[in-house]
Length: 247
Ligand SMILES: [Mn+2]
Image (tube, rainbow, N blue to C red; front, side, top):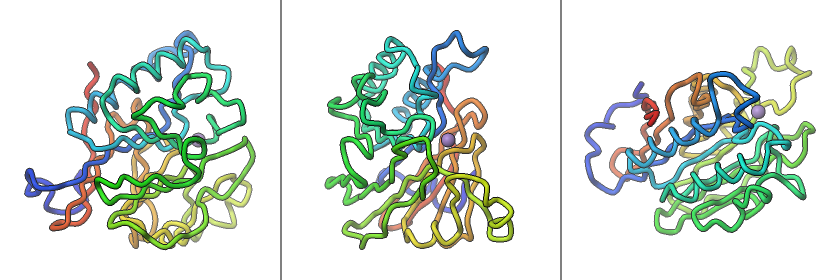
């Protein structure tokens, strides 16, 4: 899937390449048959490395729950630390940034190539070398909350927003009032972002009214892909899906 023309012609100029995934649900392997979140994580990182990603965005629910055993958490940290990639995690509703949270137990906090929104950074990370800001509001409890933080004036050439929640189109908004973490067309449009990286759904799909590029990546096991965002001065933003490399 290529959402706009030009991805092939970007060539080797100064493109920023971001790889977006979500809902890996790393858990103790014995609790699942078939899919294993660590395998999904390894595939996302291997694919991102092959694509020459400048950063990997994990848009929530990287971990399935707060009871994941420490050895499994450490394996996830070892994979991420060894990936030679910048990895930006947004805590979701399954892995909120609690005071004594699994991100700390995993040993992820302090790993040089890892940023956890809501923990290592409040709501924004700036990658000076790419003139890029990555914003996102972490889930901090299991309760409902607005998935987008306050609007801020853009300070960088490029701005990407990560959010974890449930997109609801306008005509279904009131019917879905019972749902937590609702995301509206207006929420997406107000970001004015170059790309909105969404998590919470396991299927990959664009959403919104088209005013900004807003996409769910889907989970590695269901989508079998990552979303790849390429940003260049000449071509703007292009979004494609690339098949996961399961090594
Ligand atoms: Mn979720």
